[in-house]
Amino acid sequence: MATTTMQAEKWTLSAIAELYDAPLLDLVFRAAEVHRRYHDPREVQLCTLLSIKTGNCPEDCAYCPQSSRYETEVDPGRMMKTDEVLAAAREAKEAGSTRFCMGAAWREVTDGRAFDRVLEIVRGVRGLGMEACCTLGMLTEDQAHRLAEAGLSAYNHNLDTSENFYGQIITTRTYEDRLRTIANVSKAGISVCCGGILGLGESQLDRIKLLHTLANLDPQPESVPINALVPVEGTPLEGKPALDTFEWIRAIAVARILLPRAMVRLSAGRLSIPREAQALAFLAGANSIFTGEKLLTTPNPEADFDRSLLADLGLQGRAPDKHECPKDRHATAGTGTVAPEERVAAPLA
Image (cartoon, rainbow, N blue to C red; front, side, top):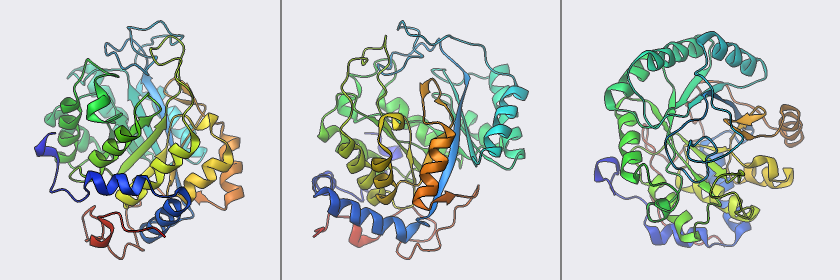
């Protein structure tokens, strides 16, 4: 593990394992208490994710239909023009989204016209009064600083799974590479969006280890996407069984307790999860969803579904660039740390 990206450990692996193994309803109850301490429980941030450059990725991520190594129905496309992206951002804003996320199927960022266009797009999205997030693959410290100067709010770079299981899913990029990019983003002063994917074939211990790594990043991620695998025909994981919904809820609840200040985002896989389970996820501390028909290339619930769900639950959209936590009574000001009494898995009963 890269010591340069980790701070003095706040959570031990055994404490997280004890927390993860707690009775589910007790776990959700505790997560709900933490959520209400640090966030307005009625607010949900609405985000939109757009693929601005699709397909032909040289990496071999076993879950991804954008890899050039697999025969999928994804049609590779050119990089979108600035005005096309900004038109999509305006549409997302009109639909209620306050964060606009842009993904490019690159292994890494390369300097040149394409990156210059990304910087121009970021400035344009910020000019609309929206938060801007990018996921572009690996990037250097200098590139991260250029994104920060353009006004980028957050950079997404998921760890996907535990370091132990990672090599069974991806061989073209190391875990250390991912941690290095996350460190570069943090050094540039950009918020880190970092989570994982559940249902890849990993063990429960792998999920615990992923959460352990996320919880001990320094600083902790501002945003933690919890994805459920969407098996895509043509990828190595096309035959994986559906993730158990309670495992999804369990991971969300533990993430909320471990990363109390973070936005816990319900990401890929929501289309196959019942609305009642999604309601339980909000109770367990999730406070962000992605809206729109697609998440890059995989299907997502339609806007009407989300509007109806949030209305039925009495939830409302969160304003952009809202970083204050008025109910945060226990965290140290300016840090992502947890209250001392919450650093070990105390009894939930």
